[in-house]
Image (tube, one colour):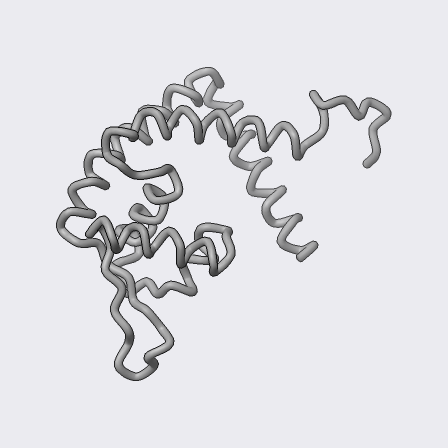
Length: 149
């Protein structure tokens, strides 16, 4: 569907980018005292949530909607900060299984409420119906863009 109004206020990429930028910048400030970035927080959270399944590095690339080089860079920083541990699988030395260290679990436990508070703060501007509609619309767009890949 084409629209005649192609202003910045109606173009999807700039809108999504601005929302993401504002959320990222705000969250970065709120977790600065923990010495992690928003991407590092997301990495810690995914590893924690998927740890019972034995999350491997390749799966994290997909979960984070990122590229392998970026994920390797994030993981190296988290390893250096003693927040994450990568172990090579004995049957395939090219594959790394990920887990949080005790320090990583502590940092995640401190950051998670800050993340949830920010999400609630932003979503509180919407009614329950608007929240549901937004979630449904974003999931529809995700599926549509995945088909384009």
